[in-house]
Image (cartoon, rainbow, N blue to C red; front, top):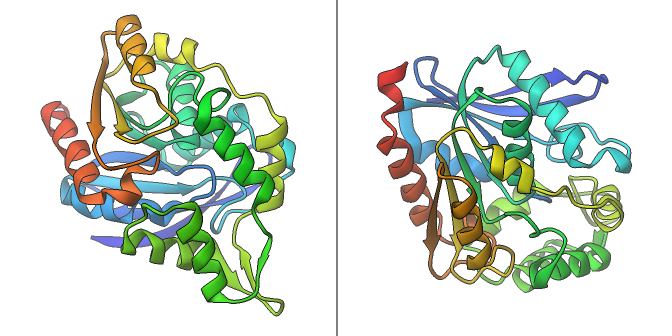
Amino acid sequence: MSVVSGFFHTRTGLRLHYLHHANAQGIPVLMLHGLRAYAQTWDSLAAALGPGYDCIALDQRGRGASAWAPSDSYRTEVYVDDLEDLVSHLDLERFVLIGHSLGGANALEYVRRNPGRVRALVIEDIGPGSSSQGEGAARIRREMAGTPLLFADWPAAEAFWRGSRPGLSAEALASRLRHSMRASDDGIVWRHDQQGIAQARLSITATDLWPAVEALDCPTLFIRGGRSDFLPPETLAAMQQRNAHIQVAQVDDASHYVHDEQGARFNRVVKEFLASLHLASEQ
């Protein structure tokens, strides 16, 4: 399976990047990363899904190799506009959609705005209220307010990630250092628009995801980390009561960052869920 970079322009002219784990005969899968992540965070899942799937991972605006944007555009409705533009660029009719945290919120809102387009949905560790209340939301706000814009050297950058994400696997830590940071003349800086993203996260009201949950019209799997501070079990139970399309899975010994901490188990859960839907027979 070849992996190639692609670029497209949004309806407002912003240039965004995506990685295409190309398999023209596979089931299309669009992948949306979290708040400060990047397209390569899904490399392991794309490899695990294998040749039956045609995986496209987006660098959402302000991240990875995508262009930065005004901070007030780092909000759900604009992210969903971007996703709609990517779907149009790729000329996709129906596809699988996967999202973690911020990407999960954007995926839920995409389904609400575009009924009938998504064949199956996987949401990693976010639900209604996650971004606005509870310890997880407070933790993210503290992190965004206190994250440095510059590190003296690579050991200092690594120490930051080890301190803020103690559960990261060795592979995930290496990926974060490689794909979310870069060397500059002054030291180690972020590849993403840290200042603008932080400003948006601290000032923009989180989207109410209950209407999106209630509107889900496709098989949907919510995956929770067993130690998550972001998606309470009570929220999962309430979502299942409101929509029969929803299934849930929990990956033990993982926090909010399930695919970064328990990658093999996360990949297996996603692969088994998609296989259970027999999507290939509908191609």
